[in-house]
Image 1 (cartoon, rainbow, N blue to C red):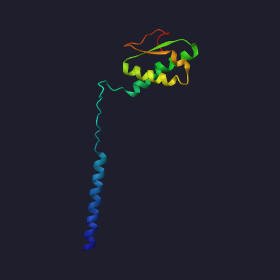
Image 2 (cartoon, rainbow, N blue to C red; image 1 turned 90 degrees about the horizontal axis):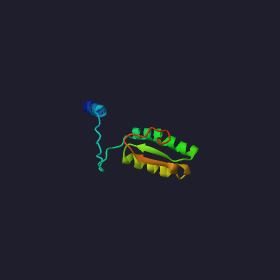
Image 3 (cartoon, rainbow, N blue to C red; image 1 turned 180 degrees about the vertical axis):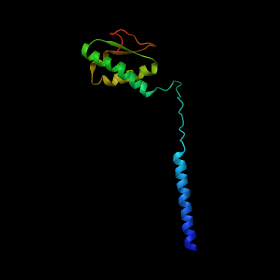
Image 4 (cartoon, helix red, strand yellow; image 1 turned 60 degrees about the vertical axis):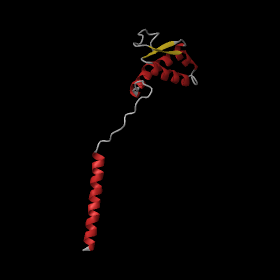
Amino acid sequence: MQQLAERHQRFQAAMRQGWKHLIGTARPRRTRQRRNRAGQPAIDPVALTMLAVNRLGPATVRTATQGRALVVAVPDTHTAEIFRAALQEMQKTRRTDRLVDVVVAAEPARRWGRDA
């Protein structure tokens, strides 16, 4: 009889543990949203990457091939700071990246020589 009671207790413990695991796995996890302490809206990394590829990339290629200065327009100052830091790092390997200037503008210029 003692053996049967021990088996039953182990079975109950295993079932309890299984249910806890199932419920814990199925329950959606809540993640805390970090506040942006600087008061600036958070930058979407996908949008930032798209801006870098679509504006900064062609500008660096054009300055490397043509050798003349270009202006890259970005929507806000925080993005401009990030782009300037990226250009500063890239200048260590390519001197022509010094010819790219980053400015803040609501709408980028549409002229070929000015918009990169």
